Amino acid sequence: MITIEEQFEKHPVCPFCSTQIDKLFTSEIRSFLGRRYIYYCSKCLKVLGLSHRKGFWMG
Ligand SMILES: [Zn+2]
Image (cartoon, rainbow, N blue to C red; front, side, top):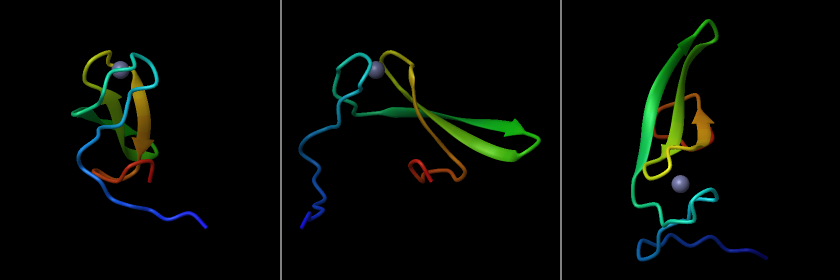
């Protein structure tokens, strides 16, 4: 069984630049499919994920 625990002391690490992510950038994309939000690393600017909704990771 896997348990999920919220924690705030450690930051996730960017898979591209290997720095700890304490901030993500997000931009809104408008396409014919509707709005999308793109999330990217604030250090190397590589894209980490897309979401349909703002503030909802990989939604
Ligand atoms: Zn990065």
